[in-house]
Image 1: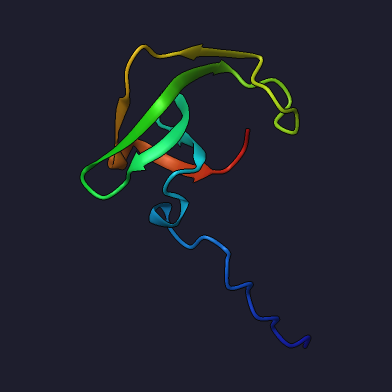
Image 2: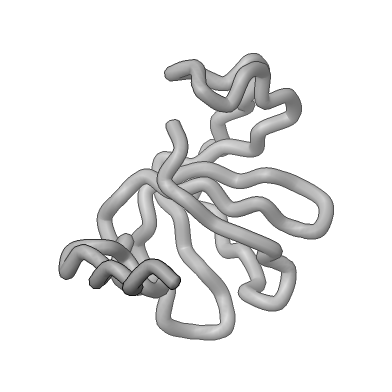
Length: 87
């Protein structure tokens, strides 16, 4: 069996590690994207946020259809299925 390699020290382990980054939240009904402002409470706050209605190719630099929101968005943590740095 191959020995397990150590994980890099700067690899994010939780949402809090991504504070200030532009994150993508894949939720039960929608995909949200924005700068992570506050991940600490029951809700996750994103600024400069939008709802992604059509992703296009995930490897591309832009969303096929992302609608900017006029204000910050607050997403319930219990609705988040996964999150990542994407676009």
